[in-house]
Length: 324
Ligand SMILES: NC(=O)c1ccc[n+]([C@@H]2O[C@H](COP(=O)([O-])OP(=O)(O)OC[C@H]3O[C@@H](n4cnc5c(N)ncnc54)[C@H](O)[C@@H]3O)[C@@H](O)[C@H]2O)c1
Image (cartoon, rainbow, N blue to C red; front, side, top):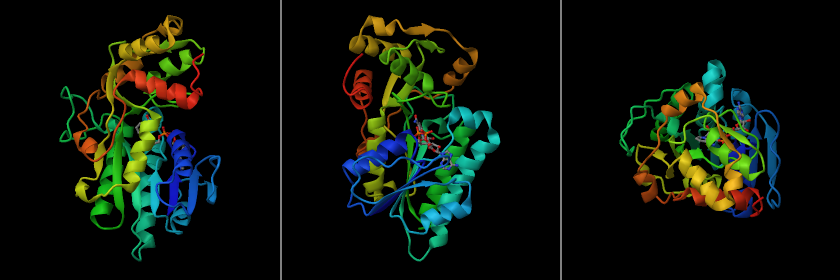
């Protein structure tokens, strides 16, 4: 199998590449990692050829050059995230919509029976308030952000190109992936990770939203599991509905803080300082917070069931299992 990861230098791209190298989903002939600004670093221990490429998905010719070797699996993670897509409308549509269309069209233009599996990362931001208490698989996407709108459009393209037999698409509406390692990115949802990661690494952190804020979470380890499952699953049961609400855990910020206290103690919790921010509060108030994800669960997708587990995954995967 030849696999191509677009956005391969990002948080999930790097983790997926490491996972494919450590435990391939199929005999891996070649792995190509692509990112816009710098070539992603190759994962350690790779025994197959790994190409690390700098390319921008808004450039149709560059995308065609990546697709022409006919990768069997295309994992499309390249995107600008929610905060940036909201503040820079042109950039958000150029990358998240036009870039996605470039990828799918490059596949169409290869033709000649080429029919790769394409895994596309959408988001729960495709849903906008007002919400039912629990969002089921029948709830209609109606985003209230540009990022969410761009992701819905990507979903529609993926479904239509799948229906037309151009590719075999699976769209994953990811929960907020938490605890995000490394420096904060421009996703508005970063606060949910910051309040765990920063205290656990010895830093004070500002909490800009009320502790009663509820949201939908899964760990990076679960997200990699979703991508692996989407890459290998039988897509027949999806029919025309190619996009799935991913499983996760519904928790409040207070639930997060309670879990942090149980795992790392009160001194760690004391590093969190409540400083409400009107803008952030208005953004998070419009986010969905609970899903059944029944369809995805029945198709073998699984995530954590407690926030303690999510924190333990961070400690194991990012802190070498050692609490400060
Ligand atoms: N992390 C989350 O909580 C979350 C939640 C829902 C959906 N998603 C989606 O999952 C995907 C991966 O998320 P992530 O957390 O790894 O994001 P990330 O920001 O860490 O990685 C995205 C990568 O895409 C690259 N990229 C941006 N523009 C590009 C372009 N024009 N051409 C090529 N590469 C470009 C970036 O440089 C970055 O390395 C994204 O599509 C994101 O929208 C993530």
